[in-house]
Amino acid sequence: MEPSQEALCRGYTFPRRIETHVKICVLALLIERVAERACQKSWARIRHNLVTLQATKFSNKYFVFFERNQPSKEAVKVFQSLDISIPKRVLAISSR
Image (cartoon, rainbow, N blue to C red; front, side):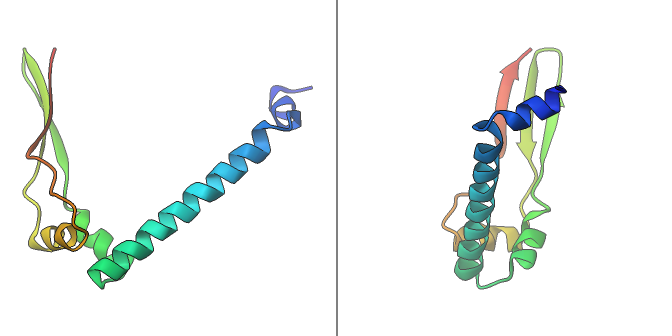
């Protein structure tokens, strides 16, 4: 029996993975709907407003850190509507 077939035959692995996948998808849909209602915008518009928020990795001989860019006015409004604080300017610092 091939390894892929063997994994399918183990009754506990495959059904549990499908069930978990479905639960994650339902949770994601619920999060989308809550955001749409709080912002009074479509999910596509919310995503469009947030896609510009990015983090950049910087490094030198001693440190590595991640810094976010300046959020757009629309992104700030989304965060405020959802009662979520905007991420800190410097997200993480670590030594090399």
